[in-house]
Amino acid sequence: MKTTLPIRRWTVDDFDKMIEFGLLAPRAYELLDGVVYNTQGFVKRWSVYDFDRMAEGGVITPEERAELVAGTVFQPRSLRPLHSYVRAKLVRMLFEATQLDDSVIVSPTGYVLLDDETIVAPEIFVMTMQAHENVDAWPGAADVPFVAEIVDPLFATMVEMKRSVYARFGIPELWIVDPVRGTVAVHASPEGDAYREVAEYRRGDSWRSSALKGALVQTIDAVGRER
Image (cartoon, rainbow, N blue to C red; front, side, top):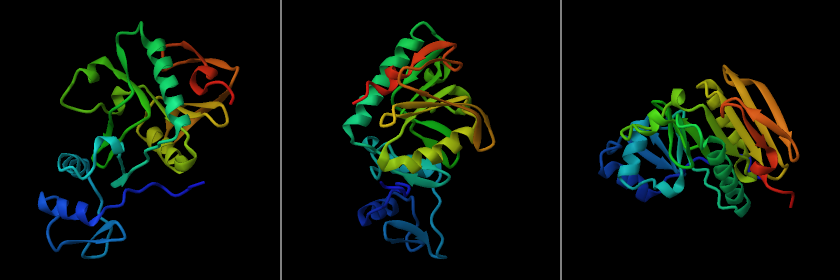
């Protein structure tokens, strides 16, 4: 199992493009083993502005679902069939759970902007309709009452890191869905870098989600039947 974080490594072509469109000053940075350093030997910390410029310049693409956390770009895209299956089930379940609530909308794509150096792409999240209708900005933490992440054996460490990020920025409810174990860990009451309340549900269990206004949730609808 891969336990290291999936840090985005840059190619020489990426590096040249970043210099070409002015993101990096010539001779002020160098590329070593896919990592950008300044001439003092420090790793380059990226901002959300830098991240946007990379997207505009084609250095990163929407298909990558790259994320920026505390100045580091990560690339945790999964191509596993099981991951895709569970994600589709979550999307369907959340659309059904929120269909009568016109104050929120389910987003199976997109980013959540948390600060100047952190913009994440949750597997799926719920945001306020007001934030959804603002087409000029990504939603922020205050606009997102719910986030779900799927455990992928290749990127388990990334989910652990994002759990502390979501808590630190006060996301009210986080689900960590583990299709291999057949569980959903529901995190609530964020405080500091952790959630004070964590409850784990297995296939056959059900519970009511506070973030989804008391909607009844069946674990099996999120993780699928045992294979």
